[in-house]
Each structure stands twice: as structure tokens, then as C-alpha cells.
Image (cartoon, rainbow, N blue to C red; front, top):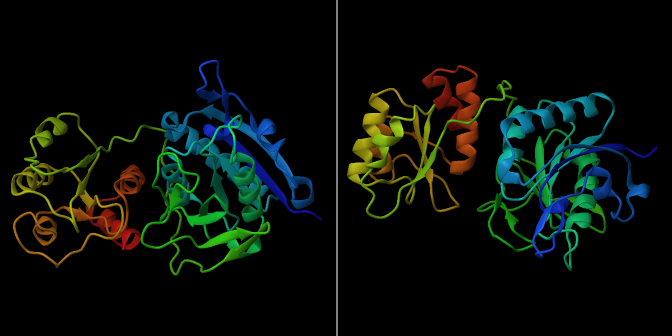
Length: 329
């Protein structure tokens, strides 16, 4: 018997067609996406459902939680895995959101397209076929949420969109993919050394955690206005391994003193924050002493999602620090 796989469509470029101006807009539903995929009948039995049809910057936590419910329903009904099609702009964030909450052995695999369906060299059908091949492969069981584009398989917690237009936009900076699709088959190079238990599912409320990048000459004046918006936490993309100017460090310390959860990541796009490499005012050692939480290898976008789920679960500061440390190191 062929394995069963379920495809949930959320929109994005993979579901877009060309308008009169030559630009693309969402138009295709789940059945439309599956129609041009070659060799699908021989690979798996496929069911599908249109969950949304949105450009990915408009995806909300409520859409992600609906996709999570869909995935659970399908897996509990016998699916070997679930594929979600999604716009590439925020795909890595939705993937990590789901990865933090997914508690089944069967994988969720996200895919999309960098080129619209009506454009030369449209990559949507190939990406969808590769994602389905991954979702049904027993070798990826227990690996949580994966991202598959350009015949390349990535862990949700490592993958980033690193180019605005290239078909090979999705990479895992500093680590690399865990596997590739070769001649229609999954070839895994390695499995993650560490997996984590699922976190409590939050409600569908908005994510009230801003991400601020601290550039050259930053004096932290933004911190005082930011505090007036009553955020649930703050993520700072700091330079190097976690460095801020002295004035910005002072401003962030005041936010911590006032009760705000403040965390930092490196803005470099690859690598980790450190803890004891530098000791000058504004260095990572100084910032940690002031109560700022280092995010390790997590990007600012992903640390924001992790903090949203942890704060929504009602965890206290020490519990949050512990979870950020083990999931980011």
C-alpha cells in the first residue's frame, strides 16, 4: 500500500499566478497545487485541504495554530506525514513555531516556491514533490518540523531564507542541511543530536515581542518609547557575539530593572552569542550581568517566537532562561 500524506495549503508564491501587470497574487488552492506535480500517484496517496491563501507576511498565529490542528488531525487519521505549503518570506518562522509545539513522531514538512506558477522555471511542483517524498520517509520520523526546498532538507530550528530571489534561498547557516533528495529519494547525512519536548500550545493572540537591531552609533533612545507599548519581551540583534554600545546597554538594563524580559542574539546571520569572550562595558559578559538573556545560535526571528510561546505558557524568568539556553545553545 502507498503511504498516506496530507497537504495543507496556506498560500504564498507557490499558490500565485500572474496578474495583468505581470506581478503575482494568490489564486491557487490545494488541489490546483497538486495537479501539475509529476509522478505523485506512484509515490503516495495524497489528501489535501486549503487552510488559507495568503502572502506569508499576513500569516498570523491563528493560521499557524489552525495548521497545527490540521496536522494533528491528519496524522491521527493515519497520515505518514503532513506537508504545508507556505510563502517563503516568513516560512522559517512558521516552521519553527510548529516545531516548538509538534508532539508527534510523524513529520511536518514545509515547502514553498521562489517563482510563481506561471513563471519560467517555476519551482513549486518540484519542491512539493520533494516535500512529500520527505514526509513519507521513515528516516525522518521523530525529527519534528522540516523545511524542504531545492531538493534540500533542513531542520526548522536552523533554516533561514538567505536570499531574496534565488531558488537556493533556504540555507542552514553555519550548519548546513541534514539531507537532500536524490532521484526522488531522501538521502540523510545526519540526524540532530538533540531533540526537545513540545511546549504548551499558546492561544491565538498576537506576538507582542519586537525585534530591534542595534547598529553603529546606536544610543538606545528607542528603548524608552518602546517601553510605552507594553511589550511582553524584547529581542535585540546585537553586533558580534552579543555587543551593544554603552548607552544602549544602560537603556536595556533599565528595561530589565523595570521588569521587561530582554534577550539578545547576534545580528551576523550565523554563529552564536558567547558568554565570557569579552568583558568591556556593553560586551556580552557585561550584558548578561545586567540581566540580558543570550539567545545562542537562534536568530532574532526565532527567539521572538520561542519567547512568545514561553511567556504565553506563564513561565517565570528562570524557567524562560533555562529553555532559551538549552534550545539556543
